[in-house]
Amino acid sequence: MNKFSQETAVTQLGKGLYGATMDRSWWIISGPNGGYVAAIILRAICEEVNDATRAPRSMTLQFLRVPKEGAVEIEVVVERVGRTVSNVSARMTQDGVLLVVALAVLAQNRESSLSFNELPGLPRLPDGSAVPTADSIATEDLDPDRDVPMRGHYEQRWVIGEHPFQPLASGESVARTGGWLRPTGGEAIDAIALAAMTDAWLPPIFSRVREPLLIPTIDLTIHFRGLPADPYGFCFVLFESPLSQDGYLIEHGQIFDAQGHLVAESRQLAVVI
Image 1 (cartoon, rainbow, N blue to C red):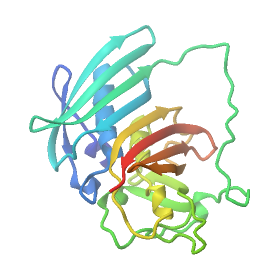
Image 2 (spheres, one colour):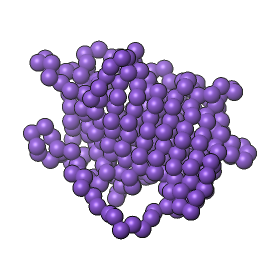
Image 3 (tube, helix red, strand yellow):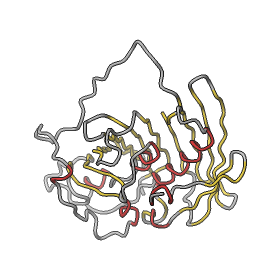
């Protein structure tokens, strides 16, 4: 079992009840990374559904409180089982306190007379050129002044957007960043890893501001579109925040495999502190 699988592992405690451990190596400032929490909950959901033909299609999480290091419990309820679709809810608690609520859809592939794909593939650079390959980009410490243990779980190659807290002097920087990303340790990218990766990149708002700020996620929705052609290779991620108002920030995310196939999309709502 690879490190990611170990640190997102769940143990069945009873019917519909699972235990897991919040590992401090996944911390970002004051608590665990939301994608890491999502991955643990999704693993418990998949264990409860226990049907490999029903792949995760959608997942929505609302974060009520910040988990602490140590044991948590996940209660999973299969709300409905149809011929091809399972609807599931989950609740993560710690010492009897509710932390996260989640809804998920797992479903089989369906034959359909309607099938098309008009997506443009990998994003382009601002000048319209193709993004460079992951192997052509050197590794760099993108935010050396802050201790964020979670970043040690990923290999990152920055491609799009200004580096964190270094916006253009002209004031024309936008909250749009992206690059190549994959888990460390030779972990295959499955739906559970994709859930974690939707919240693994540095927030795009960091490319628009000069000083760090806290933006805890309160709602995260993930749509799963497929799996990477190469499960061990880099994926290209693109994140942007087109709107911040009334103290709340929106973040849109896309994850592509190296061939340009869209494998996951996400949307976050975060509080600006």
